[in-house]
Image (tube, rainbow, N blue to C red; front, side, top):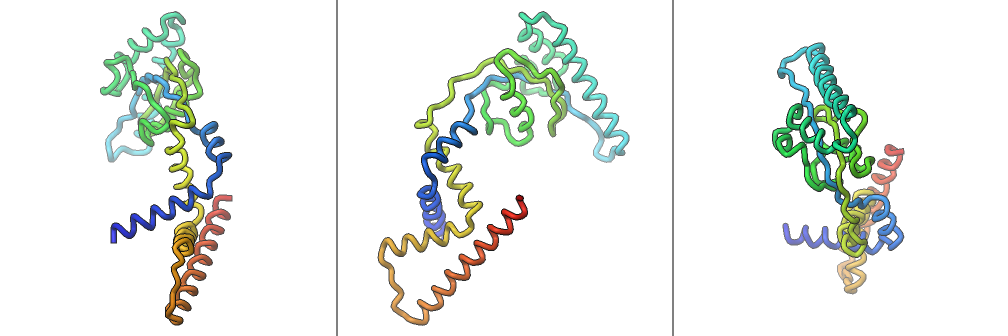
Length: 229
């Protein structure tokens, strides 16, 4: 069962890839593929008890944000030629990220999918910066409040180097938005290998099953598109 499921999924992926053009690949590469960047951050976390009241939670958030703003103000007042050194010192003094604070807040080289969903806003903010620039406003995330410094940018990977990754991503997107992809993939394979059903009752049942499945898939996609719109 596992083996057959794998083959069916593989067939759907292959079908999806056949429906993705070079234009789509290049557009995704230009719009979505980013170079690796070296980033540091100062994190001020928001701490309160699990049974804290809404007022206590708000107070904790305000205190954390004020502390982050204090660190940011010190960074803004620093000599521009010593921003990196000042940022490192402030990270050691203020940051609640124990995994990076003693290394000056360094998160190393990252890309859009390196740090996980809790860091989405941090990564988005970092990619808006240039090298040796920092966020001039405190950035809020699920983890707390951040000050972010971008220090270095690597050369973007070539399209040839990431083509397979891009194609896999586009194929998964295609399948998720085209419910009929797996059904049409099976039809395509059966046609390719000249599979014929000789039993008339089974052939009728199979034809009805395919038609109903395609109709349900199309209705599902239509509802999803309307909901998205």
